[in-house]
Length: 364
Image 1 (spheres, rainbow, N blue to C red):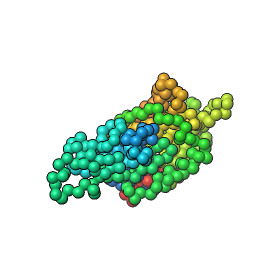
Image 2: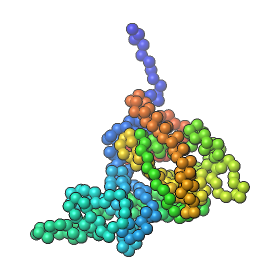
Image 3: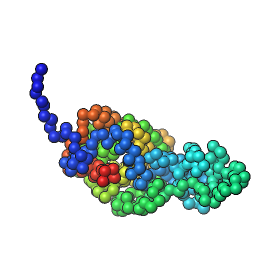
Image 4: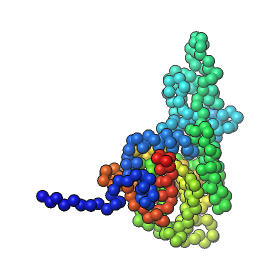
C-alpha cells in the first residue's frame, strides 16, 4: 500500500468567502446548496429588495388583482376604486390564511377561512361574530402593506417599507433605455409562462451576467448576433447592468435589430430585440436546488396568436439550452468536492460584480 500523499492545487482548497472573492474565484459552492444560506438570502436579499411581480396590463379595472410570491412572502397586487395600484402581504391577520388565490376582480377581499373581509385599501371591514367581542377593535387591523413602484408597465414590490426608491436600483437602466429609445410602453402583455429549474437561483444569474458561454451553448443565436468580447457591449451600474449583442446582418431598412438585456439586482432581467418586442425574466428561489423562472412577454398588439407563439417558441429554445447548463452546474456544485470555481476576471467581470453583491448581503 502506498503512503504517498497527493497535494491538491490551491483552487481545490476551501477558503473563506472573502478570500475566494478576492482571488477571483466564485463564492463557495455550498452557498448554492446550504439551506441555512438559502434562509439567510430570503431574509437579507428577497425581503429587502425590489421584486418584479407583474404588469399593469393585468390590472385594467378597479378591483382587478393578482397574487404571486416574492421569495417566501405571498403577495396580492390590486387596483383600488380610485385607480391606484397597491400591494399587500396576502396573509389574513386573523390566522394566517391566504386571502386571495389566483387572479380576478373583486369589490372586496374576503378570506375563505373565517370570512374576514377587507376593502381594496387593505383595511378590515368585517369579521363575523366580532360584534360579540367587547375588546375587539377592527380599526387598527388590516393587511400588511408593501412598497410598490413601477417602471413603465412593470410593477415592483418591496417588503421593506423603508427601502430606498426603485430608482436607486434601476435608475441607470431607466436613463439608458431613454438614451437608446427603448420604449417599455410600446407593446402590451401578450403571454406569461412559468418554468421550474433544478438549480439554485444564483446559478441562473451567474449565467446571465456573461455571454462567454454563448458561442458554445447558443450556436444559433451566436450565428445571428455578435457574442465575442470585441463586439459585445457592456454598461455597468452599482446594482444593475446592460449588455448588447449587435446583429451580424443589419436589417436593410436600418431598423434597430440588436438583442439587448438589462439586469437589476437581485433576480430580474428584461431582454429585447430592438423595439420589436421584449420579455422579462424573474428567477424566484423555491429551495436551495430549485428555482422558478417566470417570463412575461410583450409583443405588438397587431401580432396574431400564432406569431406570438412562434416567437415564444424561438426564445424558449435559448432558454432550454441554458436550463441544461444550469442543472448540470448544480450537480457539480452539489458534489462536495468542488469548493469554488476559478473565473476569468475580465471576461466574467459582471459575474464577479453579482457575486460581490451576494457576498455583501450574506457575509458582509
